[in-house]
Amino acid sequence: MADISWFDASSFEDYGLVPPGDYSAVIVQSEMRPNRAGTGEYLLLVFEIVEGEHAGRRVATRLNLKHPNPKAVEIAGSKLAAILRAVGVARPHDTSELHDIPLSIRVTTETGMDGQASFNEVTSFKKLGKLSPSQAGGQADAPKQLSAPW
Image 1: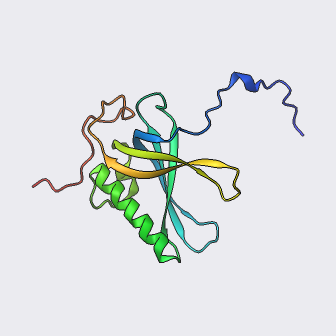
Image 2: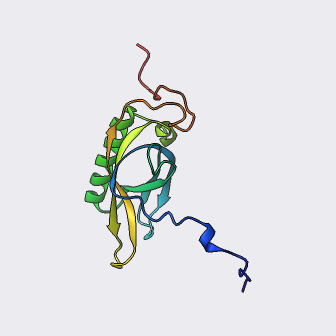
Image 3: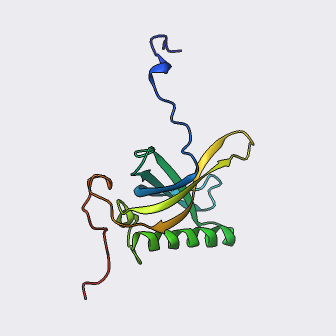
């Protein structure tokens, strides 16, 4: 056991869930991970909200890009295509190419399979206008583009 009697939880804010709604965000983390059953992989994308009351908060989505269920792969592919359109990167070689480009995300609140736990889910992705460097985590003003120079 560890003595934590010195810890005062009241001095820390309880962030809870991000309220459902549309938010300006950027992708700040991306990683392929094995699924729990070991039968496939999902792409974890972490979004950071960059404007408004919830700026700095993070939400995530998981895209089952390699899965034995073809419907799961189809749904994930559709979501990834929407993300690529939203950030203006048609054929990335690496997910890092999607980072720090502003887009609009729709966040919902879902209930877990246990019927108790709730979590945020990112359900849609749309193109967004440019943000200032401070809003986009200090990145350059123009969105990253991978289009050919001609």
